Image (cartoon, rainbow, N blue to C red):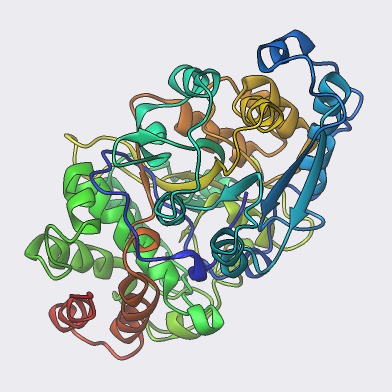
Length: 463
């Protein structure tokens, strides 16, 4: 899984997106402690794939080269390199993989200077819209479009489209609508996994009554210069689960203001947990301690018996102490963020990458096609360790190493689960990665009232 940097919030919304999943809003993959599956994968370099599928791109591919430019760097790049080898053996095409930590800053420079890569892995729809705006992104071949129609939901196709034109097939994905807990501790206490928000609050109250010395919830929004982003994820989950995808999309597009009464009520719902001194902050202190607790450390008290629940993304699996068993019957696991509104049902906030091409040579189209196949998705899953998944419905979830990744993939493949991209990743940077972080931190740390908090964020929206 690629965890997005806030530099990627480029204030562009590929308008009118009718979708449902949201992206991880943390500062860096290094901070999250997770990459694109950095261990635990199997060797797929000798795997055989159907070479005849590439005949549609011509017979003169041998000896050609394709540059792939991405923010995914060593050691997270190795599973990609491994899955490219069978492709090269089939086609004779050399894939020159160029991972750069300066990807977000350098890609626009390269495009504007006439030195665009053949293919770039774009971490969110806003950057795709910006690149399409340069006039240099080329539409993929029909075979790629057909694969996306077959293997992804309509929402994902729309995320890879700009103004109704399809440009980029999805690649990897991530989900973050999870609540972590200890299956062992739950079994010993006789607690059951809540399916709805009301059940979640009832369980929390039961935990307060049963364990007066242990707070039910532990939380942390500390992340250096990016402090506050985990609070944005809480708000996004509640907006999506309670108000539904239409209001969620309107909120992103500023068709309703950030301080709309519906959003005020949603943040107050978040506050019913995060600002309740009876509920938080297990293992760390009072409500204000949430602002100074790093998100990496925030869930650890579950393993120490100092809290019961922690809301965080699937990628949090990398932050548990060494030796912690992450399994449905293990030391820790996670359950989906509970349903709030029965008319909305189950929903997921998450994100992912998209494969955009700046050249239409046959070898480039062949690689685009390969990356859009179920065959590649399954090889990539086998080659990767914990932390990588895709919304490609051709993925056999058994090929994923981690049970949390398997659970997340099942959500992404379930037609009954609404998916939306992380709202703050799609809002203007002045809002999603500045005012919202700052004001939600004040809301936690200083007890700033909800209306003032959202008024201040709304005031930051660019004219």
